[in-house]
Each structure stands twice: as structure tokens, then as C-alpha cells.
Amino acid sequence: MYMTPEEKIAYVKKNIDDETAINPSGQILYYPHSVGHPDNPEEWYILNRDEHKRIIRKLEEDGYIKNVKFYSKNGNFLLEKVEKDDFEKYCEYLLDNRNSNEKDDRSPIGVANFYVTKKDDDFYYKGNHLELSKSADYYKVFCALYAKIPKGGTVYYKDLIEEVRNRIPKTKKMSDTNIKKFIQNKLTTNQEGFLRKSHIPITQDNSKKLITTERGIGIVFNNKMG
Image 1 (tube, rainbow, N blue to C red):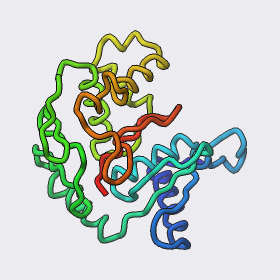
Image 2 (image 1 turned 180 degrees about the vertical axis):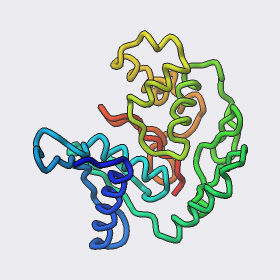
Image 3 (image 1 turned 180 degrees about the horizontal axis):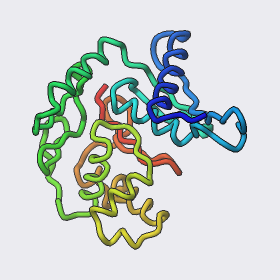
């Protein structure tokens, strides 16, 4: 028995659909479990937990689910399925903009905006231009974060580390532990972090911190307003 990537995604979607169907509207608690092979379920997985988590993030990027939050050390997520009408709007948005060279900073679902947007090499906070040093490490690290998840969400350290190393040559010799500290410092510290240098409030009007760290997991970028 083997699951193709398409079958794995369909499996996760069905689980979300089933859980949503028996719950009140709003967020559901979802556990990204491993799926064992029928012949050897304890040692041979046809869908492991890491794949399961990546699919959750992909479905969020694709607009199938929203408001995804890492919930506990047990690996649970809180998430919400996007209503059918909103998802169809999202698909129409992608089709309408697939050949466009201009980035639209509006959310494809509804009219919600993002706290931080980007045009060319310039960043904006609530539409106001940010005066940043483009040669500084904090700027390059934030560029790496934004490149991975411009609409917000969680990026795993392994993915962000690769992006940072491509942008900042001196980090290529750093150990994973040291580069994680480097990333955290350049994003969140009071001395040289992006938030300090950009003068962006740490906590936004939705009571969430714009950038937070998840120990051992990655960086959370709460960029969606509301």
C-alpha cells in the first residue's frame, strides 16, 4: 500500500471535513497523526507526522483552512476550514492574478489586510513606509521570513535557515543552534531585532504579537489583521 502526494492531501482534507461536520462553527482541534502501513503499522508509515504537518501548512497557504495555530506540545493544531464561498473566491483570485507581475497586498479571502506588506524592496506597516537599512542583517532575516510566509503563519526552522543562509553568506558556517539564535535576535530582540529597528509595536491591535518563536518548531508571523 502506497499513498501518492495527492492521496495524502485528500486524506488530511477528509479528516478536516469530518471533524468540521460534527463541530460547531469556528476552530477545531486537529492532531496530525502518523498513518501506519496495514502490514507493519508500528514501523512503516505511509503518512508520517511531519508530512501531516506540512500538508496542514500547505492547505493554509492554499486557502483551504485558516487561523492555524500550533496548540500544544502534543502536536495539536487549532484551525478553521474556509467556507466554500470564500474558497471559491480565493481560487478565482489565483486565476485572475496568475499572470500578473504586481503583488496584491489584499487578502484573497474577503477584504482583510496584512500588517506588513512589501513592494519591490520596501516594506510597509499598515500602509506606512518603513525606513530600514537594507544592508543590515535584521532586514535580510526579515526578508527571508517574508519570502517564506508573506501572508503570515508558521515557518519551520529548517526552511527558514535555508533561506537565511542563501541571503547572508556568513551564516553558512553557523551551526543550526547558533543560526536559530541569530534569527531570533535579528527578528525579536530589543537591541537589534527587526521589530525594534522598524518601530513596529510588538503586540498588534488583535492582541497578538507580530513575531513570536515556537521553541524547537520555528517562527510565527501573525501578519493577518483581525
